[in-house]
Image (cartoon, rainbow, N blue to C red; front, top):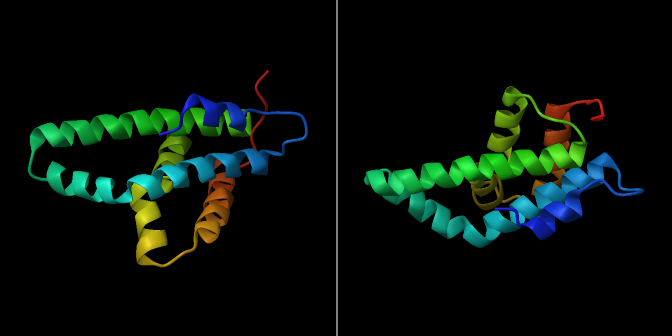
Length: 130
C-alpha cells in the first residue's frame, strides 16, 4: 500500500504541519486506490466465492491496516489506540474511496480534503511521543 519512500516523506520534518503530513498520507493512499480500484472490485467478487482468494483479501487488508496505521502514527506524531486505528483504517479503505470517488462523483481533491479533515477529527488532539 505505502512504500518506504512515501512513508519517509510523511515523517515529521521542520516546518511540516500535522495537517500537511496527514494530507500526504491520504494522497498516498488515494493514489494506490486509484491505481487498483478495478483489481479491488474483482478481488472482492472472487473472494465471495473462493476461500483461497478470501484469504488473500484478508491478508491484504491486515497489511493495509498496519501500513495505514504506521503512516498515520508517523504523521500525527503519536500512537493510535486500537479503536482509532480501526476507524482510520476503515475511512481510508478502498471501498470508501470507490463509493465517494466513483459512485458519488467526488473529485480527487474533494476526497483528499475531506479525508484529511476526517482523519484529523477522528484522531483528535494527541500528545507528542516523548
